[in-house]
Length: 228
Image 1 (tube, rainbow, N blue to C red):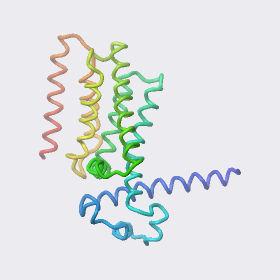
Image 2 (image 1 turned 90 degrees about the vertical axis):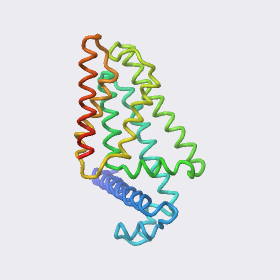
Image 3 (image 1 turned 45 degrees about the vertical axis):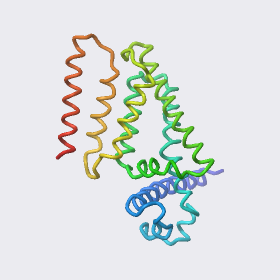
Image 4 (image 1 turned 120 degrees about the vertical axis):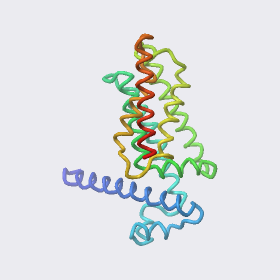
Protein backbone atom coordinates (compact mmCIF):
# COMPACT_ATOMS: atom_id res chain seq x y z
CA UNK A 1 0.00 0.00 0.00
CA UNK A 2 1.36 3.42 -0.98
CA UNK A 3 1.77 6.38 1.37
CA UNK A 4 -1.11 8.16 -0.37
CA UNK A 5 -3.38 5.15 0.08
CA UNK A 6 -2.46 4.86 3.77
CA UNK A 7 -3.14 8.57 4.22
CA UNK A 8 -6.51 8.26 2.52
CA UNK A 9 -7.36 5.28 4.71
CA UNK A 10 -6.53 7.20 7.90
CA UNK A 11 -8.63 10.18 6.80
CA UNK A 12 -11.53 7.85 6.00
CA UNK A 13 -11.22 6.17 9.41
CA UNK A 14 -11.08 9.56 11.15
CA UNK A 15 -14.17 10.75 9.30
CA UNK A 16 -16.05 7.61 10.23
CA UNK A 17 -15.05 8.06 13.90
CA UNK A 18 -16.27 11.67 13.90
CA UNK A 19 -19.54 10.77 12.17
CA UNK A 20 -20.08 7.89 14.59
CA UNK A 21 -19.58 10.20 17.57
CA UNK A 22 -22.06 12.73 16.16
CA UNK A 23 -24.49 9.94 15.31
CA UNK A 24 -24.39 8.56 18.85
CA UNK A 25 -24.78 12.00 20.43
CA UNK A 26 -27.77 12.79 18.20
CA UNK A 27 -29.42 9.38 18.64
CA UNK A 28 -29.02 9.32 22.42
CA UNK A 29 -30.35 12.87 22.69
CA UNK A 30 -33.46 11.81 20.78
CA UNK A 31 -33.78 8.65 22.87
CA UNK A 32 -33.65 10.82 26.00
CA UNK A 33 -36.29 13.22 24.63
CA UNK A 34 -38.72 10.81 22.95
CA UNK A 35 -37.83 7.42 24.34
CA UNK A 36 -35.96 4.59 22.61
CA UNK A 37 -39.07 2.84 21.27
CA UNK A 38 -40.64 6.07 19.94
CA UNK A 39 -37.52 7.18 18.06
CA UNK A 40 -37.13 5.96 14.48
CA UNK A 41 -34.10 5.86 12.23
CA UNK A 42 -35.86 8.48 10.10
CA UNK A 43 -36.01 10.78 13.15
CA UNK A 44 -32.27 10.34 13.61
CA UNK A 45 -31.53 10.92 9.92
CA UNK A 46 -33.63 14.10 9.93
CA UNK A 47 -31.86 15.39 13.04
CA UNK A 48 -28.52 14.80 11.32
CA UNK A 49 -29.76 16.42 8.08
CA UNK A 50 -28.92 13.33 6.04
CA UNK A 51 -31.04 10.89 4.06
CA UNK A 52 -32.11 7.57 5.50
CA UNK A 53 -30.03 5.66 2.91
CA UNK A 54 -26.99 7.68 4.02
CA UNK A 55 -27.71 6.70 7.64
CA UNK A 56 -27.88 3.05 6.58
CA UNK A 57 -24.21 3.34 5.69
CA UNK A 58 -23.54 3.36 9.44
CA UNK A 59 -26.52 1.55 11.00
CA UNK A 60 -29.28 -0.63 9.57
CA UNK A 61 -31.43 -0.86 12.70
CA UNK A 62 -31.71 0.82 16.10
CA UNK A 63 -30.10 -2.13 17.85
CA UNK A 64 -26.91 -1.25 15.98
CA UNK A 65 -26.83 2.01 17.97
CA UNK A 66 -26.95 0.08 21.24
CA UNK A 67 -24.04 -2.03 20.01
CA UNK A 68 -22.11 1.15 19.18
CA UNK A 69 -22.83 2.48 22.67
CA UNK A 70 -21.51 -0.68 24.30
CA UNK A 71 -18.39 -0.46 22.14
CA UNK A 72 -17.79 3.22 22.88
CA UNK A 73 -18.87 3.53 26.51
CA UNK A 74 -18.08 0.14 28.04
CA UNK A 75 -15.63 -1.78 25.86
CA UNK A 76 -13.62 1.35 25.15
CA UNK A 77 -12.94 2.04 28.81
CA UNK A 78 -12.15 -1.59 29.53
CA UNK A 79 -9.41 -1.39 26.89
CA UNK A 80 -8.13 1.95 28.21
CA UNK A 81 -7.89 0.61 31.76
CA UNK A 82 -5.95 -2.43 30.59
CA UNK A 83 -3.51 -0.14 28.78
CA UNK A 84 -3.00 2.05 31.85
CA UNK A 85 -2.46 -0.99 34.05
CA UNK A 86 0.36 -2.16 31.75
CA UNK A 87 2.23 1.17 31.77
CA UNK A 88 5.41 1.25 33.87
CA UNK A 89 6.10 4.95 33.38
CA UNK A 90 3.20 6.10 35.58
CA UNK A 91 2.77 5.85 39.35
CA UNK A 92 -0.50 4.32 40.62
CA UNK A 93 -1.81 7.76 41.63
CA UNK A 94 -1.12 9.09 38.12
CA UNK A 95 -2.91 6.13 36.55
CA UNK A 96 -5.96 6.59 38.79
CA UNK A 97 -6.05 10.35 38.16
CA UNK A 98 -5.78 9.89 34.39
CA UNK A 99 -8.46 7.20 34.28
CA UNK A 100 -10.82 9.18 36.51
CA UNK A 101 -10.26 12.24 34.33
CA UNK A 102 -11.08 10.31 31.14
CA UNK A 103 -14.26 8.82 32.58
CA UNK A 104 -15.50 12.11 34.06
CA UNK A 105 -14.83 13.98 30.82
CA UNK A 106 -16.70 11.37 28.76
CA UNK A 107 -19.65 11.34 31.15
CA UNK A 108 -19.83 15.15 31.12
CA UNK A 109 -19.38 15.69 27.38
CA UNK A 110 -21.55 12.74 26.28
CA UNK A 111 -23.88 12.29 29.24
CA UNK A 112 -26.82 11.03 27.16
CA UNK A 113 -24.72 8.16 25.87
CA UNK A 114 -24.08 6.80 29.35
CA UNK A 115 -27.59 7.46 30.63
CA UNK A 116 -29.28 5.75 27.68
CA UNK A 117 -26.98 2.72 27.91
CA UNK A 118 -27.57 2.51 31.66
CA UNK A 119 -31.34 2.60 31.16
CA UNK A 120 -31.22 0.13 28.26
CA UNK A 121 -29.28 -2.66 29.98
CA UNK A 122 -32.44 -4.72 30.48
CA UNK A 123 -33.32 -4.67 26.76
CA UNK A 124 -29.88 -5.38 25.32
CA UNK A 125 -30.13 -8.47 23.10
CA UNK A 126 -27.70 -11.35 23.30
CA UNK A 127 -24.81 -11.61 22.72
CA UNK A 128 -24.57 -7.84 23.24
CA UNK A 129 -25.87 -8.03 26.82
CA UNK A 130 -23.21 -10.58 27.75
CA UNK A 131 -20.49 -8.53 26.09
CA UNK A 132 -21.60 -5.43 27.98
CA UNK A 133 -21.67 -7.27 31.32
CA UNK A 134 -18.23 -8.78 30.77
CA UNK A 135 -16.79 -5.37 29.84
CA UNK A 136 -18.25 -3.85 33.04
CA UNK A 137 -16.63 -6.64 35.06
CA UNK A 138 -13.35 -5.98 33.29
CA UNK A 139 -13.54 -2.26 34.11
CA UNK A 140 -14.09 -3.03 37.79
CA UNK A 141 -11.36 -5.66 37.83
CA UNK A 142 -8.78 -3.41 36.16
CA UNK A 143 -9.68 -0.40 38.33
CA UNK A 144 -9.40 -2.58 41.44
CA UNK A 145 -5.97 -3.70 40.27
CA UNK A 146 -4.85 -0.06 39.94
CA UNK A 147 -5.88 0.63 43.53
CA UNK A 148 -4.23 -2.59 44.77
CA UNK A 149 -0.97 -1.56 43.08
CA UNK A 150 -1.02 1.77 44.91
CA UNK A 151 -1.69 0.08 48.25
CA UNK A 152 1.16 -2.38 47.67
CA UNK A 153 3.67 0.40 46.93
CA UNK A 154 2.51 2.44 49.93
CA UNK A 155 1.34 5.33 47.78
CA UNK A 156 -2.28 4.63 48.78
CA UNK A 157 -3.44 4.04 52.32
CA UNK A 158 -4.62 0.51 53.18
CA UNK A 159 -8.17 0.19 51.82
CA UNK A 160 -10.34 -2.54 50.42
CA UNK A 161 -9.41 -2.09 46.76
CA UNK A 162 -12.70 -3.34 45.33
CA UNK A 163 -14.77 -1.07 47.56
CA UNK A 164 -12.55 1.89 46.66
CA UNK A 165 -12.82 1.10 42.93
CA UNK A 166 -16.62 0.85 43.11
CA UNK A 167 -16.76 4.17 44.99
CA UNK A 168 -14.59 5.92 42.41
CA UNK A 169 -16.52 4.49 39.47
CA UNK A 170 -19.80 5.52 41.09
CA UNK A 171 -18.52 9.06 41.61
CA UNK A 172 -17.38 9.26 37.98
CA UNK A 173 -20.51 7.71 36.44
CA UNK A 174 -22.86 9.91 38.47
CA UNK A 175 -21.49 12.93 36.60
CA UNK A 176 -23.63 11.86 33.62
CA UNK A 177 -26.76 12.49 35.71
CA UNK A 178 -25.99 15.86 37.29
CA UNK A 179 -23.61 17.65 34.91
CA UNK A 180 -25.24 20.61 33.16
CA UNK A 181 -24.48 21.33 29.54
CA UNK A 182 -22.43 24.50 29.25
CA UNK A 183 -20.74 24.08 32.63
CA UNK A 184 -16.94 24.03 32.93
CA UNK A 185 -15.95 20.45 32.13
CA UNK A 186 -12.30 20.85 33.04
CA UNK A 187 -13.13 22.38 36.43
CA UNK A 188 -15.29 19.36 37.24
CA UNK A 189 -12.58 16.98 36.00
CA UNK A 190 -9.96 18.70 38.16
CA UNK A 191 -12.16 18.64 41.25
CA UNK A 192 -13.13 14.98 40.96
CA UNK A 193 -9.62 13.76 40.14
CA UNK A 194 -8.42 15.71 43.17
CA UNK A 195 -11.08 14.08 45.33
CA UNK A 196 -10.15 10.63 44.00
CA UNK A 197 -6.45 10.95 44.72
CA UNK A 198 -7.08 12.58 48.11
CA UNK A 199 -9.38 9.73 49.09
CA UNK A 200 -6.66 7.16 48.41
CA UNK A 201 -3.49 9.03 49.36
CA UNK A 202 -1.38 7.64 52.18
CA UNK A 203 -0.20 10.05 54.87
CA UNK A 204 0.26 10.56 58.58
CA UNK A 205 -2.66 11.30 60.90
CA UNK A 206 -1.65 14.92 61.31
CA UNK A 207 -1.89 15.63 57.64
CA UNK A 208 -5.04 13.55 57.28
CA UNK A 209 -7.18 16.05 59.14
CA UNK A 210 -6.00 18.91 56.95
CA UNK A 211 -6.46 16.79 53.82
CA UNK A 212 -9.98 15.78 54.87
CA UNK A 213 -10.87 19.43 55.49
CA UNK A 214 -9.50 20.35 52.06
CA UNK A 215 -11.53 17.55 50.46
CA UNK A 216 -14.71 18.75 52.18
CA UNK A 217 -14.02 22.30 50.97
CA UNK A 218 -13.63 20.97 47.42
CA UNK A 219 -16.95 19.13 47.63
CA UNK A 220 -18.68 22.25 48.96
CA UNK A 221 -17.19 24.38 46.18
CA UNK A 222 -18.38 21.90 43.54
CA UNK A 223 -21.88 21.83 45.03
CA UNK A 224 -21.97 25.65 45.12
CA UNK A 225 -21.12 25.75 41.39
CA UNK A 226 -23.81 23.21 40.60
CA UNK A 227 -26.45 25.09 42.61
CA UNK A 228 -25.45 28.30 40.82
